[in-house]
Length: 136
Image (spheres, rainbow, N blue to C red):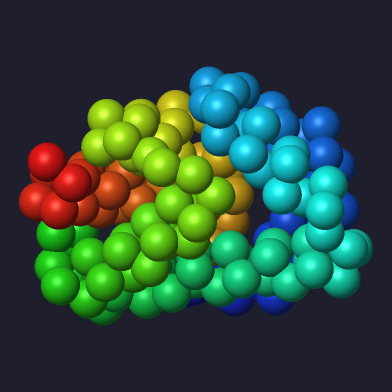
């Protein structure tokens, strides 16, 4: 399996496009808007690069054949969850819904699939495992 390794998957994405990916999570969208409004363009780009790197890091154990509930995968999901909860508290059910949106939201799914085929579903499954074992 080939993993694409873009530096910034979100380069050129407008705030309106990003908000569209968060349409099912209005509280999270508001938290992101507040955070981004206080950031410089350089800081926004750094955040985009960090999120892209997290997605690529998740693709690596998937490509190596690990299951979504395997320790290396769950370590990546934990890092993502920590980044997410730095913005605000997220319940287990909301995190599961965010995981499902990786597949159900066309824009999100396309971003994950650009890195590696099957990554959107792998992210969803890994989040489900994390929420079940660590957040319940």
